[in-house]
Image 1: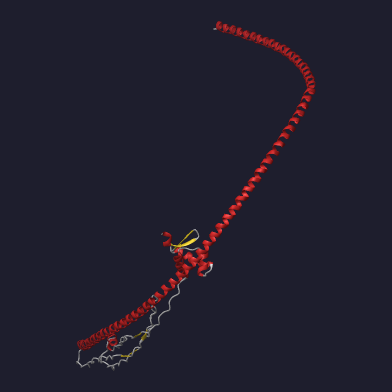
Image 2 (image 1 turned 90 degrees about the vertical axis):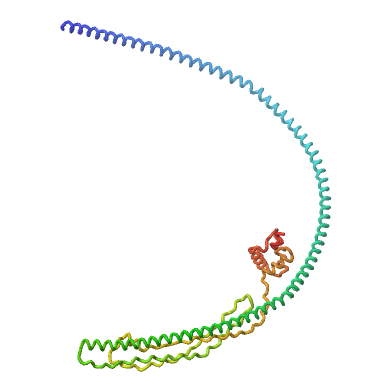
Length: 406
């Protein structure tokens, strides 16, 4: 073990000595390299300083030489520039003179051409004015002829319209009179039918009233028998309960049935029906007065005091009061004759439509002039006719729908 330890110590010392020697060698190399770097840097600095000095000297020499050369070239260039300017001025003056001469020639030619064109245009305008004046005269003549023809046609149309109206008015009057006669006959028939129906209804009411009277009489008879049976049963029960002597209880006689008097029917005033108006206006309903019916008072029978108490419901039903209302008599209808109605004035829409139909189209100003109406009335009538699809508008002209379709 001691030998191994000694060997390890010897190897350790050897390694330490090698490390120290290597360290010294590295430090020596570093110092040598540092000295070489410093020497090389000094040499580079000297070389750069020399190069800078040479560059400055060369630059100064080149600048001096260049300045001298440029100064020597200034005078020739100035002279050449002045010569070029003088030559350019001379050429410009010659060119301007040539342009001025050409412009004068062109102006003279254009002036002559314009004078010729103006003369031609004046002649053409004169010819056109003459032609237009002739055409205007012809148009005015045609317009005058059309106006005269239109006035004649319009007068003929108005005359035809008056003739048609004169022909139709008697027929319309006769139709209205016939219609009034038919209405009066119908009213008379209805009055007769109503009177017959009233008689029949009155007979039915009388038969119903007689049947009701018989039924009431039968009910009163049954009530009297029922009351007599109740009184007898009461007396029998009293004898069974109290015993003793059977005293004869007075038997209440049944109350007589009250006589029902027929009501007196007063005369019914005649209803007046207003006369019918001409068709198609409705006929006014007549004012009907209510008939007065006088009902005679019913004689109530004298009450009979029974010996035994009567139930309340039986006592209430013992004396009925009959009140009968007689039916009203049928009313008579009075018909008043009516005079023939006056013909109705046509509306503005009908007048405008008839005018458009006769003239086969017209403008708004023509409608105003011919019919003698203002602009608002004409516009309102035309708008209403257009909404009803009776009139259409084409190029400011109003036409009837049928003529426009054709």
